[in-house]
Amino acid sequence: MSKTILVVDDSGTMILSLKNNLEISGFKVITANDGAAALTRLGQAPKPDLIITDINMPNMGGIEFIGKARALPGFRFTPILVLTTESQQAKRDEARSAGASGWMVKPVPGAELLKIVKQVLPGA
Image 1 (cartoon, one colour):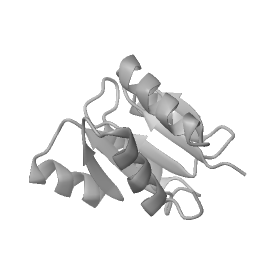
Image 2: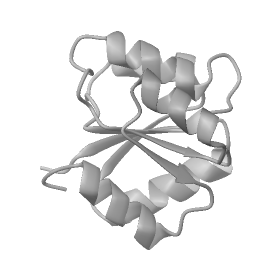
Image 3: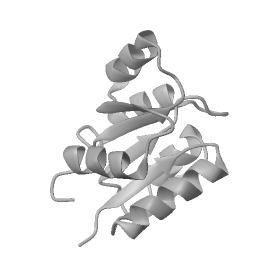
């Protein structure tokens, strides 16, 4: 059975790029355009096996989303990767404190993205 990945980003171009890359590799992809929409998505089926989120988004940013997602039953151990243009160590530390599993700086080549996804998603 294919794994489901939730992609959270306010850029339609980035969502399309990630979705195409991941679907070609056999993953099922669901999307949300900000943290608030992603929280709603977490309450619906299917439950994602992995979450990839941007940091800077309207309505609810990625760090706030990560903290709220970690507080939900069933998402305490779901891997959450940050994919952002931010590279400051302070932001990385803040994301890790909120519960992020890993950090990637945009742009990430497709092969590198898949390598990281397979590292954090057992059985992918």
